[in-house]
Image (cartoon, rainbow, N blue to C red; front, side, top):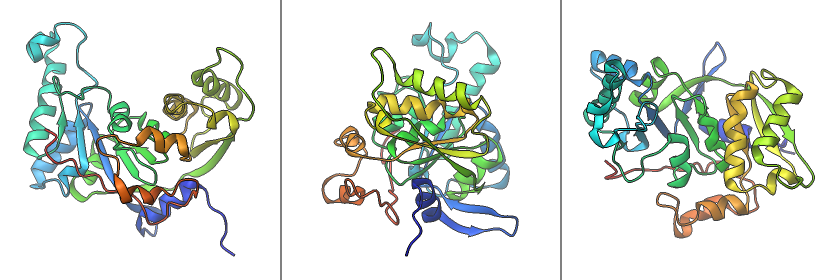
Length: 284
């Protein structure tokens, strides 16, 4: 009899290529998001090594951390801090030089990377997603295994090889049952969890959220829960996909259409061997 496995276990094992003698796993990355942050370190090293992106259309560069809220119409000329201005300029240059789709200043989809990925249907059940942002776990609300990576060597490795070395975390199931009182939101739920387990209570774990209260949340609420897993110490937060997930993704620009959506098998909870491939053609 097959031993039951968590969603995390299924997706992790589906993406493992090899395990090192030290116990780290080399995992295939379905999709990688990149923000300007420290990503210039990775691209500088790639240039030194003479490397290009292995699969550029499975990446999306998003300028989201340092864009100003005033004088945006002036572009980088409206940014008084020269160092920050240069970081934003380098994101433009790196996306162009490495042929990466890029959501920049005035792109129609401009927003926060881990918000626009679900909105565009990039984040899908069964996928392994990486990004050089601590709140990458947000994408776990779509039934994906979303992992934050460093903006230096780890990002360099993902861009060059479409793979990443990771140490497998332990798993923690957090179940919230019952009906939420009036005016209690998803943020109240996750703050209550953090109060109970502590700000480091989920350190070293992949947190999977379940229970009737979680199922009753909107997708926006689930995104909030997974987003704030990092505040509990976890690098990964996940919620198993259900009809609410499929309805949220249905019809979005990069979500599977027609028979391809059968990979999600509504209600089956079985996503082995079905991780998605999103190719962002012509998104610059």
